[in-house]
Image (cartoon, rainbow, N blue to C red; front, side):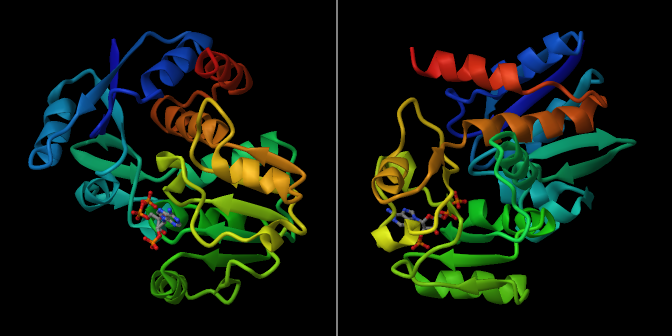
Length: 270
Ligand code: ATR
């Protein structure tokens, strides 16, 4: 049986095993997918140990190990190189291949939500690892401009300097935002609204997208709705789509995602 795992800490609530089991069923595959709570000092050894099993095919990596996984990989895709972090690993002929499928997950979920990215202006809240992973995929999908808005201005400026693309600039939270406002901050994890967000941000907003998922609309989604955003979504679809991209890398199969999103949404709201 092919073996897979997700490494993180904490990891108990990860939905990845459920998502990949659903994909495997729909693609007629028999897999085992485990959650592994890796230790701060032992992450790399635990990943190597996992791949020592001849049945091990691939693993996902989540918070707080995505940057360390990037360092471990011998070969990295472009998305991982820009993010300097990755969420998907496989080992082929003794070499670790690393991928970052988060940005593709966001782009595919927006497409599934019927949001066109061509020529659009995006305001991206946050300048951490989650933001770093989605900037280039958004631009590559046709977005015209990405305005980075962050509580700590210097961090937003550092990210913009690093990306070094004239389409990516720093903006202030009280300016009118783009057609797509994306929350990549960790505020929703703490049930908070991102500090500094102002109503004017949503003046032209077609979609307010929170990269965090929850059983209820997040504070960001509620605020966006109140101040005029036409649509709001949380990151459950992105989670499923990034997993589908990883599943394809590992197995060559493209699993259907619509039903998986519906089933997880139903389970979350129970
Ligand atoms: P991640 O890898 O998940 O992006 P991170 O690198 O720690 O995590 O970055 C978290 C981001 O969320 C940062 O941009 C942070 O803003 P600061 O740079 O000012 O710290 C942002 N953030 C976290 N909590 C926030 C809050 N309550 N309001 C606004 N921004 C917040």
